[in-house]
Length: 135
Image (cartoon, rainbow, N blue to C red; front, side, top):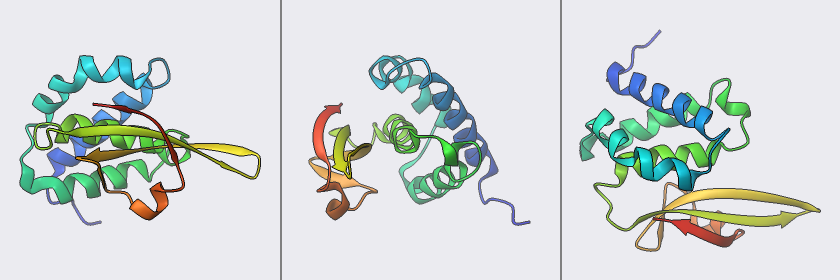
């Protein structure tokens, strides 16, 4: 078993993902984020040079049970990154979009800074119609 480089950061990511996962069962992001944004930034005490590790740990945590089966995987991903990265990206937004495929409607959320997507392929995002954004 390989130990993570920064076990405290991994633990914090795991705890915050569980917290957001539970909250999204009862509240909308517009209710959750204003109340928690400053507290999450303080909890992480995160520096900009940890971006790649944060993203790797977040993807690792969300790829395991029970999160891999949840329908709002991308929303939790965006909410955690939004709260942590907000001090570094002043124009950071969570964007919500929909697409229709074979009589199904799929939703997706992604992060944008100054109109450019972060951590998502712009080609894939062209398939989604933008509904709203949260800043």
